[in-house]
Image 1 (spheres, rainbow, N blue to C red):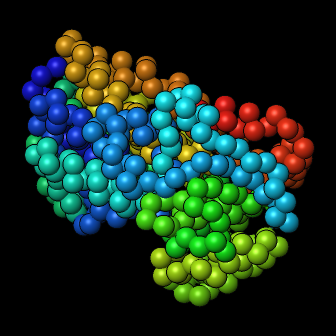
Image 2 (cartoon, rainbow, N blue to C red):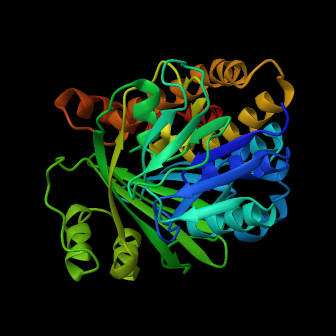
Length: 393
């Protein structure tokens, strides 16, 4: 289709990448973001090969190489620092045709924002979407517009994209109801300077035990991205943000983990430490309604244990643009084709992530039995590295 007018709600990875693709098709695009300043949620992101391939198609592959960390190995250690396995990632990267690059999330978002602006796309910050309206309320396929909390509204458009994250307002319009967040575990993350006391520059290492996990992953410019997780009770009171109480909490939770994890906790700048309740929602049967479409976390919030949230949002953007570019029947038809092409893949990854969370961060006694069985496999199954490599593809 040609000459479409598009509004995108949400200026994250999915919204900005969609904006770039659609501007390059010659569409008039306006991105609205609720934040006054676009700030990353989380310190970094592991962008696996499928996401990097989309960045390549945006012409940003060289920036991924420059900004990303060199990740050649993935290792699992016990809390006694016993190496359970050591996986060379390079054969997998060669098989799929591209490397994965851990990258600072703020730098990735800034790169996408700068690229989007260079296309001439409009970007308005500080606008919180309150809802979506049809021009003709009796016509499900009528053109639409967004209304904002300050009482203003967007132009009437041919297509409205909801890329407004896990707490999506646009999703409420598409589905006709709210979807409650389902708590899974608590995650701490941030960036620290590389040092030999923590790990090697080209290794992603994870320590697991007691239903907890601590991990270090290299990102660009001599930094490690760290993330640590524990299945705390949903209502566990958090320490005051940016205080030493946050470090004390980690010391207590991970007190039985090895010296390198203790070194990591000591090296953390608590003023920049993120403590995030990790949630998802029930899988959706569709992502579209009339001329409105969901992508990224608004459609399929993917738990971080899969390392696929950002990559799937990038895939969504590319495939949505392809459907719009190659379909001339109608916007509604193109959106249905997009949903049919994406729904099974993304929902399968969402559900697989839930199973992984139960395995890594058990809440129930039955979950804990499964976690112990997983530890036993990590320790003794010599073929497990092949299974892990297959799961990362």
